[in-house]
Length: 115
Length: 112
Image (cartoon, rainbow over all chains, first blue to last red):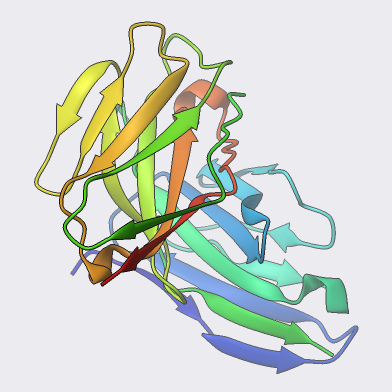
């Protein structure tokens, strides 16, 4: 089954404790992206990757890091989480090679609470 | 990057047709228009995509005027299960270099 998986689905942590949220897709997609969703603000892009070893900042990259060492994985790293990073996070992927579309497939979300 | 503007919320009743309009004045020549649907605590999912005129699938229709500065998602005969947030997105990763900007979305509430 074609899917994007995220882990963990729920996480409660404390300020300053480094954490990683994993994202994996099994569709051989080139493009992967991380979003955060907050009430009243919709979906905001954090980082994206056009392919392996190619990453770039989205609209709200401060406080986050990413890496793309393999095509299928795109982990989101919070080196020193703060309470303002409490949010619902979504990973997404799409194919861009020769395709006209940007149809993205989203993961189920990770609800992060930073105390 | 094309920025989109949508109504924050809309109400409807079961069986009615719902039209949600998205404004995108800065749309680029090669941009496509894509709509996503999101239920609470789930990731958005693709509904429909178009470039110009009209596109229809089993779920919805998308109307795009000639100037492409706006688009309208049409949901025929909505049911309670269509209650969700609907996002309009303009562009494509390879045209924009990968950066995508979603609007705030339209929260549709369908009442019995």
